[in-house]
Length: 297
Image (cartoon, rainbow, N blue to C red):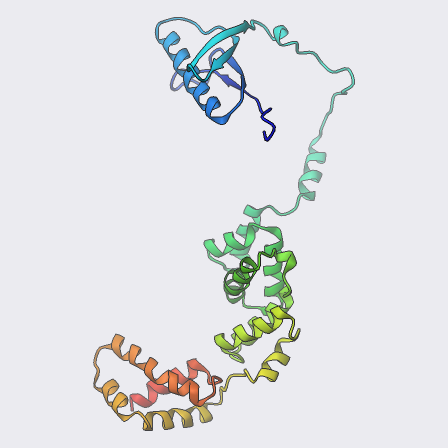
């Protein structure tokens, strides 16, 4: 194609609407562009329709198409198969394939994307979108399954692979095979997110350290960077009490608000000071539960 030597042959035959039997075929040869191919198809369809509608018959022939004039002409007729010079090749022996061979070949095929998508939906309870996104490429699918094997939570693993992991690959124009993070490492991080050892913000810092090769062990990164969430309810309640005591006006506004949506939004005003008080290590979910309880007292 880059050398200007690409050529197309187009074969056209028509049939009446509702019929299963095609009419006589014509062949248009030596088309050298997609545009000319499209034009030649339209031209030949119209030509054959005009002939058939006038009660004529289509001659089996080879035609040439002039794209500049949008016209075609007969090059030569081909009445029988012999005109096409068909003949058996003496060097090719007949091949007989039995059902056992077909089944053996089928069994040796790798898992295809559609089959893998269906399995992901059933085995990991993924929705249609997630299963489709993760099953299309074999290496990405294998990475996902390795992550789930070590991380247990399939949905959380899917979110991280489609989010942070894929974004980083795209930003650095890397393939899954080039990833500096293994599925096992990401799985270990998923475990610590799921058990609330580390927050979402802290998890991104762990991911960054894994990606840059700063460290290879998730737990070690969490310990060294002090990213472990505080989930001790006693300690968290003490922080909530201090923050609420320092924000009497906001507390009064919250308690006087009857709209549930506005009250939920107002809770966010307390979370900033609480995260600051806990040096970013407080468990946001527990903070929220304690806030709702204490503000309702």
